[in-house]
Image 1 (cartoon, rainbow, N blue to C red):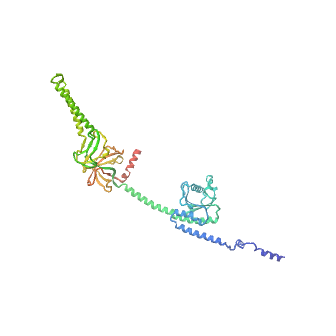
Image 2: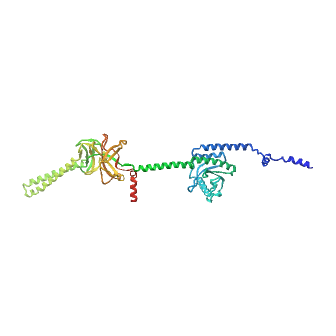
Image 3: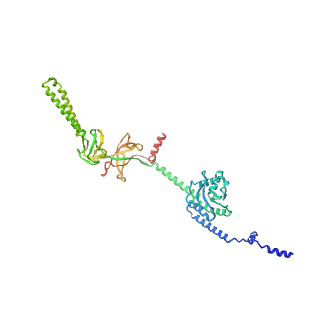
Length: 481
């Protein structure tokens, strides 16, 4: 009976039992499935390839993009966010890259929410070690949006430098829980990324660069401070115009309406040449009426003088009548003089300077109104309107460089003749001083009416005063010291 029992028990020990499980429990060799081995090999190969790509990254931005998108080759996830961590400011975490997104929208609600979560967890000290995160670690306000902006299971993996300082982190989300093996795999890859991140923008390089930059800044500062004491000539810019010298002004000789202008602007005229004429209808009628009145008065005077031979009382009115005749003669002569001034002639030879014929024809003018000028084209000077805010101390004979619009690359030398003491308002509503100058060596192609910019030189000053003259003036006017 014993033998039978023994024979019966011995075969049944191997029936229905897994040899691999038994061997594993007893400490023997474990034979892994073929599919699991191939999967582990592919993950190991992917890790090596990713580490190679990380070492080839040229910038931190490229590194973050690689970490956010290529990590799928190691573990499966739905969304990844790469953070940069700073110890300054209220918001400690900043999203640098998001998986499957080329450009991060800083104003997106999800990005704003994730940054707030990271900042709050950083303050709690929950981000030092890699591991899963849950909504229970956050405040009530952030928990309400957890289901909207994140999947149920979140994995956090910090990026830590060699000096144990955190420079960033990896935020991964998906629907299923994270396994310990996946966490260790992500942690291994994160160490490689942190080392590359430090190499691309690490503290040592920044410190070294800052030291070099600091030395350069001090050197530049010393050079600039020394240059501020260099002597330079004070100068200012102002608009300039070539104007005629001592022109003959042609004004309106009487009140009336201009009927015709016989010359064109900037044309050469001779002495006595007719420039313009008035509408002579009124003046001609006044002359004819004056002649008729003189004829009537003269006939009355003859009548009185003939009656004086017959009647003594009639002869007594002869002096009064003679005065009337002289008055009418004066009125006729005045009307004749007015009629003779209908045509205005050139007082001298030269060019005629005025704006446009159409602006004057048919326009009523008064006596003394300026209409045009006649000037010698070879006699000209410079008129400079120096704004009050740009005024400097000017001396007679001061050097001036003129840059005309017709020749902007040519500097024409000139010298100051006179500067007014009182400023006047220009047509552009700018208060300016009138400065007169002349060319020291005038070119042959200069024309009256050309405009440009004049650079007026003053006394020698330091470079500091030259650069900060106007700011110091405004500051003194504002503060009053």
